[in-house]
Length: 210
Image (tube, rainbow, N blue to C red; front, top):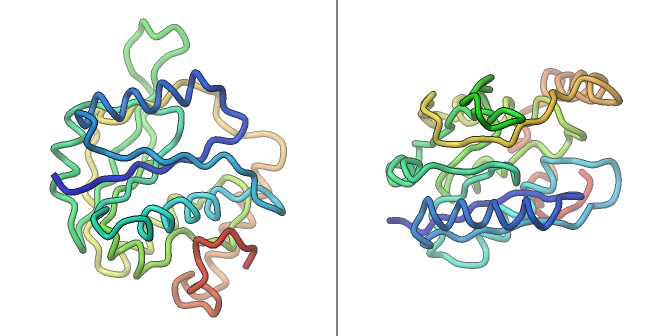
């Protein structure tokens, strides 16, 4: 198995959730994968893209043996079948399993799959694409933009709807600043060159505001 590193941000997350996340990775990969968590809130408006990039960049620079970096959510658990799928990841071929939610009672099975949230790519592709678009702030559109930009660059995205990744249930984000942030992120995507072609994107993963 190629060396794999799972990366997730963890802002205001309980130690119970963090421990469950690490235990699930260890169980799914027989202890062969690394698990890196970011807990520091960067300056400025919260940006999942900048926080994810900080961890991805650290994973790449920490060891040349880390070949596959999995950006995921801290409140997910993983099936051992995910390990077999990760073995196929290589330059130009990425894995984006559909995320399933467990139920609040965890007795009714799985429901409400969503299309993004976990993405496994080879270090070469993360470097070439310079990670997530750090111009985006708040939740909304950062995952979809990353996948579409990878596909536009010629990377094959393998999608599977098998429950390889299960997310702890929570209600969808619809209130607060979420709609405005999502709308603004879509505008950034539509009105600007792709992130990896912009001046300053070579500094991706440094935790800086573009």
